[in-house]
Image 1: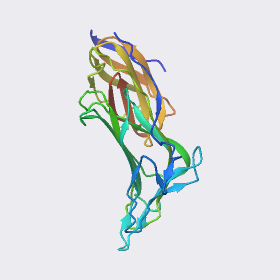
Image 2: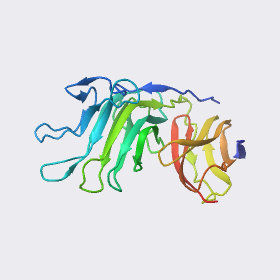
Image 3: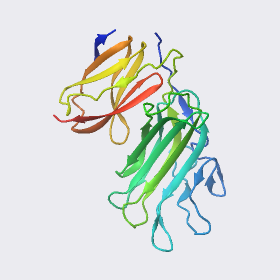
Image 4: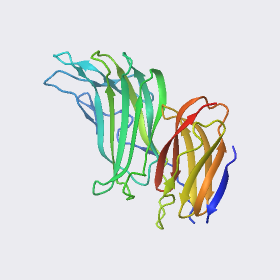
Amino acid sequence: MKLHAVLLVGGVFLTALSHAQITNGGFEAWTDDLPDSWTTNNSDPQGLYPISKSTEAHAGAFAVRGEVELSDGGQPYPPVLQRFEEPIGGTPGELSGWYRFNPVAAGDQMTASVTLLDADNGLVAIGVRSFSTAQPDYAQFYVPLDYSIGNGNQASKANIAFGLAPATSVAGSWFLLDDIAFQGTASVPETGRAITFVGMPYPQPVNDVVHLKVDMPIAGRIRVEVLDALGRRVSAPVDEVLPAGSAVLQWSAPSALGNGRYLLRVVAGDRSFIRMLTVQR
């Protein structure tokens, strides 16, 4: 698919992809039936253990299982799995991993969230994703990180959390997680941000050609990806180096892109923006 950039007003080449493993992100190390380096909401006094070891792994010997249990009072007790202050370097583009999900009631949701912090605990980026559709076999998921709300500093650590929010008081919904990692690290130029503004894609809803206005104060590489409701890439129409200035990116929505709502993730240098895209043909 060919990109057409129309410059309105008039470097550094920025790209460095990586796949950074997270401490015990494969859930192979366990102590007393708890995953090493992770925090759970298992409660011995209450006899509630919603987080457990599973041999149904995507790779290796083990995965982590989270399941909604009921307390003595009949209230749902959902699983919570967290990893605090995971050391990171660079600028991750997204959190990825493999999952299975079995909701027993309509509206049950598995959630994944990640926040990147600088050395002084200032917010650098955030990503949140929910899953409500049953996934009987392992599938890869992505949680894109949005740097547009951050302070622009270099991230030094990450807080990661997974949970399951039941819509009813019925127990039994569960998820399996394995092989959690960061992807898409981009180098950050010392001369300033590579992108300062991303407009909303237009027209909405999109039928054919998509337009997207961006501001690039310095020359740099820009990447646009189309993600479905599960965070999976369904299209990557833009991957180009642009000169400094403002531009309107134009590309044709692929015919295989069905009607519905999608996410656009726009990445350039140290910034990542999320925009909604509705397709109606």
